[in-house]
Length: 264
Ligand code: IPE
Ligand code: IPE
Ligand code: MG
Image 1: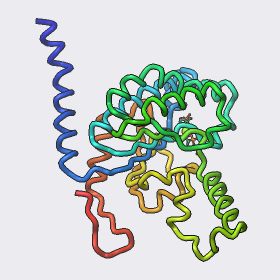
Image 2 (image 1 turned 135 degrees about the vertical axis):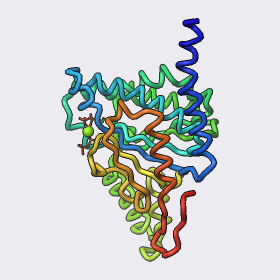
Image 3 (image 1 turned 60 degrees about the horizontal axis):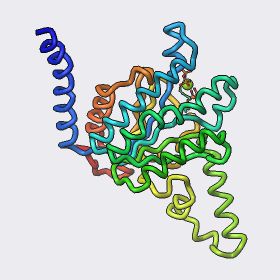
Image 4 (image 1 turned 90 degrees about the vertical axis):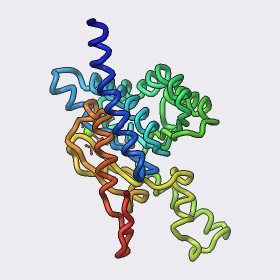
């Protein structure tokens, strides 16, 4: 009897969530969702825990949100995990953050493979500690043939650095006479960004109530829909993600024209 009740208790929310996912999928799903995962430190502080406890809890949210994003048919999920400015944090916190990809991937890589997820990374890879590089590279290699959702970690990523590198590469081509400056256009610039192989984000979500971009995808977000939620990243759950996509589906995107390109 108790077993039956307990099963019912867990099965009901699962069924409701599955129904919500099916309903969301019957409308336009954003191809690329980018998330600024913020609020781990405040989540921990509220509980009198060290900041790293918030980062550890945030890792579980990464798993939940990756899974539901893949179930919803999102093609690319980019997660801002570490910025080029986050090196300003205390060494102990940085060391912990650099160990998280290893812990996340050693725990969840089999699950990601089962879900046909392809792991990728944008950011300055070379400057990461070698243990971080190794675990990310292993996951990239192990999922390279997968053709489901791309789970793209922005790790040691900064949009200004990305744009500087892009401009240096293009300036070099011009200096070598390989291109004429008049040939520099949107598509040439895009081909020199770290996201050159990805569609631009349709939806940007930032958790924790901060309303800023913090050096994230400044070029790529030119026409994305923005959503800022007060929920702290460790508390951001499947229901929050479904609500975000539903809200996105009510937006009318005009891209400068007068005709609305509805998301329904
Ligand atoms: C986001 O949480 C994680 C990273 C930036 C690495 P924070 O650590 O920024 O959490 P808050 O903003 O201090 O609450
Ligand atoms: C942005 O969050 C970077 C990541 C989520 C990885 P921060 O917490 O570093 O941003 P600021 O410092 O509040 O702008
Ligand atoms: Mg923060």
